Length: 284
Image (cartoon, rainbow, N blue to C red; front, top):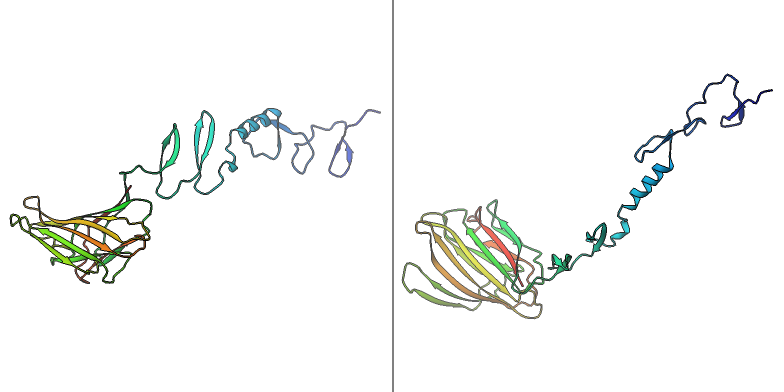
């Protein structure tokens, strides 16, 4: 009696008829013939991988960067050499990303460096806005005001409050000069003026805007008074020169670090105009 092949049907071995054809293709539920494949990207459930495809997949896995290469929020990956990956941990506040020894590194800016902290251009006329969350770590702050306009044709004053302190604690001294009178100067002592203030003239006639630079020294110190100085002037459109140049110094005796500056128009109807720009820099 001839040997009759048998196959497993999932429950028992059964005999194939002598004239039986090729067994069915195998699947996850049916016993049968399996097609081999060298693919490393196939999603088929009816083929089987060859040793060649397994080796290819292994080689690809060897080039992947392990997740445990990074260990903390803010980590950065960089190439420390050919086909070599290294981790750079996050730096500290006020540090900048630079290069040291041919690789990325966090460094503290050298003394005298100037960093733009924020830049704000007024898009809608407003009575007040705030520069908040001012980073610490610099030696001083420099505020540059350009193209300061009023929203109407009326002259006005914009106040600047340190940390929104609005009590009468700011010492103030001002020295002014006018370009229309040769040598005209005047000194004014104001013992306690609540805000730092910047006068502006309307953007009409021959004036196109107010410009100011204000420096805040010792701004991150938490034990000593805050002091500074500034210059304000108006630009004359007709001659492209400055007029009514004012220099001033101020002191705010609070001991808290400066973390915010509040800009406030003294008028509820004459607002800080569209296009007024405020750039804040940190100086090391």
